[in-house]
Image (cartoon, rainbow, N blue to C red; front, side):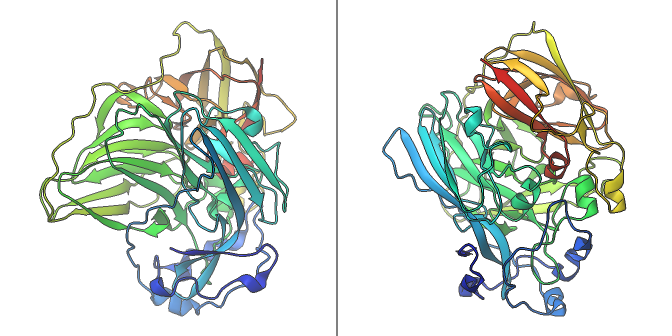
Length: 514
């Protein structure tokens, strides 16, 4: 998918056709998919760009899905020497050709969605310049990275429209893993993300025990267009439940297909970069071996039959293709019930890989252990209790404002208030309880935390148990214990990573003192 960059404030720059070589529809059902969009969103407003010419809704409805080829995401160019990573990200309006003959207005990093992949090494000195050409405030949050608080892109440090800022930090040793970047301005984060602002960030280790494996990055987003082929705004239902699009994309393509030699063993980095969709992953055709959650390796490879990724989560899988030609690997997401009165999204095929007639690749032996973070002490004092609440179905279901419905410890977000105080480098143990009627994924900035207990009946078989992650999902009524340490001082965010819930108040501030 080719994307065109538009000059800020210059609608005449919008091209009518983006890519003549691929004038196909990414998905079907557009004529009805966006009809629920009349309710309006929390911060959504029409973009100040002239609409490109679009087909009549009847023509849109008659179109059929077009499966795409596998799309390898571009890399963000590093302009510095070894040991440094220096680059520029420009956030600006652009056009995408999701629909034949239609320029769908999006927000993009460097002209594309998803944005370019950032690849750097542990220990690298990073300097990334953000140019904000969106016409509204934004930030870049480096999701999961343990970097200084004043470089983390938190909502209290917005980058004003038409300005730039440098994010400068070093990547800590031991931080190798799969991360991502996205905006974090309070109130407008949901819209900026579902309009296209998100990208993968890979931190590599020079001693990676899995470095011999070829990699496949699968960056999952979803999309909902209205009857004119434009991105539909959030509805009252989206505010209540978290937005789910009508179609699921992988690397910006619909159900992409690819081919590999029989027996090929790959490392898959899978990112759930959607606002509110849960991906319950299953693989047809081969076992899935889980080697990392979020940005942290597991202690050892673990074969799993399925993997649930809440919004914001990532998983790393090792997969060996069937050792004969003409076979298929199909990654799917199953239905998942995430709470009372929340519509259950249908099962979705994500992508398909076929084996070719090439020679069979030999099986690859995986190491018995992986470089997981060291467990935190088990004799920590219980210092915090968090209660996540969604206060029933409330105003969001009635078409009004849902602000105040989503709380942590009964409070909505106040950027001037410190909700938790910690000491830098001192480990703590917290209890987190979900008292609400739906799942809530908790994200804590600037650290990976260890899940040490869960009230789930099947917690003994949960691959999350004793693992480190930066997003943990809590089902209704679930209570967990986590251990965490934040290395550097500053004010940090913690929040539900269903972005509509975060924007409506399910967020707080941790003040980490030296």
